[in-house]
Image (cartoon, rainbow, N blue to C red; front, top):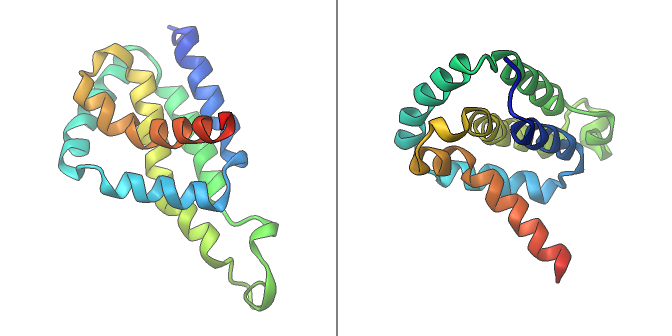
Amino acid sequence: MPIPNDAQAEIDALLAGLDLLTDDDVWFLADLWQKEDAAARRRAWPKAKAAIEAAGADRELTRVRTAVGEWMQASRSDFQGLEGLLGASGPVAGSRRTAAPALIDAAAAILAGDALDRADQAVLLGPWQTLTSDEGDQSSA
């Protein structure tokens, strides 16, 4: 069963936005995610997973996880200065690893849709929504 078009569009936008995130965006997203209630997130995930499985959207979540995994890997531009010469990717790759769960949580909330209550949606999707609404506010200013 295909996922709803609006959910597909949101997932596609999330994935397309990965390479557009600045280092500051990534740090901000990681910080937002770490400030969320971890216990609430742990309670929301089984509900999201069950809804995703019931909707037959497992493959889409796997696609997101794969894309986020690739995005987390250090890129050539991460290797700068002396640290780059020594093979260290610096703080950017670390921040991506820290922010990655927020992206996967957001995708899970999008794919689970209305099967999650408002609180579960907020804890899983909140950091991504805060980041993207903040970017929208800044671009319109």
